[in-house]
Amino acid sequence: MSDRTGPASGTTEALAAAPASGGAIRSAGRGRGRDGRDRERRGPVAKLRQLGFGTSWPAKVSWVFLVAIVLVALVGPLLISADPVRQTSSAMLPFGSPGHPLGTDDLGRDELARLVHGARPLLFVAFASTALAAVVGTGVGLLAGYAGGVVEQVLMRAVDLALAFPSILLVILLVAAAGPGTTSLVVGVGVSLAPGLARLARALAARETAKDYIVAARLGGTRTPRVLVQEILPNIAGPMVAQVVMTLSVAAGFAAGLSYLGLGIQPPTPDWGYMVQAGQEFLYSAPRLVVLPAALTLLFVVACNFVGDDLRDALDPKGTA
Picture 1 (cartoon, rainbow, N blue to C red):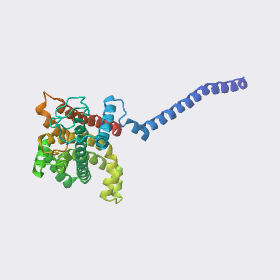
Picture 2 (picture 1 turned 90 degrees about the vertical axis):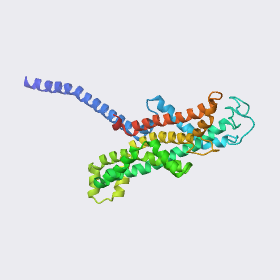
Picture 3 (picture 1 turned 60 degrees about the vertical axis):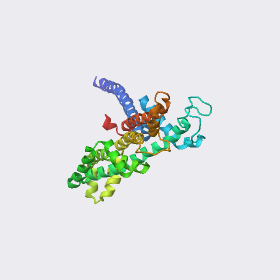
Picture 4 (picture 1 turned 45 degrees about the vertical axis):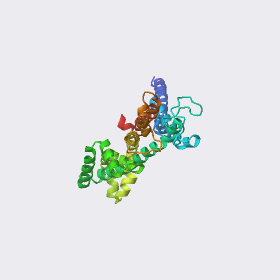
């Protein structure tokens, strides 16, 4: 009796265990599949797909618009044969005029040529001043967040003092003191935008400095410049890049506003901000002279903000969770 029940019970146990082991195998397979998909989601290809091609359609449109504006600024002047500063007797021609698709201004200058040529000065000032602000602000913030103590107090009090002034007022003061022009505009806008980036860089650097890998690097005798550049900077690059792109929109707004006030890019160089100022007296008779450059400037500013949000979601998912 025991001989018969022994094998039967063993067979029953084996049959009972078989589905469980098969399920375990399938579960393990699904686990490996999920792990593989998770690794794929975290991989560089997936992250690159997120840069501008996320779930938000405004981000997609903004990426396309920014790329188009940069291409227009770079190669557009080579494709437009009309001289943007040449004055003719064909003044105030309307839309669709022969040889002038967007008409002419009050001095007979081709409006399309002025819009295309006016993109380059604005984008140059915006990108150059943002790059200056990123270098100065990130450098100050990194040093303050890493050093701490007296160094941090001195640097951040200077940053707080700069932030106490309204940014536009600080830009106007700096540009007015140096005189109107492209160089003074780049320096003025860059210096005024650096404190905001410095505050963010300090907070991120201070968070990273408290982590074990930075403590180990310092105990290992790694020099400060190497710790800042090779250890901390790559780990705060994501949120910093997103903030820099958003700062680009502010820089473009400042550049256009100062050109409107006559403190930026000087005529006869075409510039969207100056074009708004020059065409405002014809706002009712020829609104295109104001609406077109103002709309392009506004769209550029809005697109930079959407792209900055998209980059933040892609490069700093923990910060947006």
